[in-house]
Image (cartoon, rainbow, N blue to C red; front, side, top):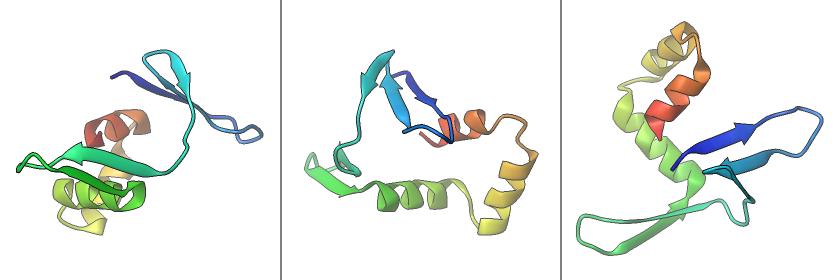
Length: 79
């Protein structure tokens, strides 16, 4: 889905999925594993696991982050 995040440091963050406003109730992610079972984990753990798959080290991640002209493009690659 198309996910847009509108950020303003003085306001509450607003999230949109396919131009529809959504709210974060719990920071959990659910997906189906290779065995077909539903997996639920924290958004933090899920994000960490996927970043570790993409980058072999923290230095590699930081270098890519710092050289990326548009941080949004890197974020989209990780989702």
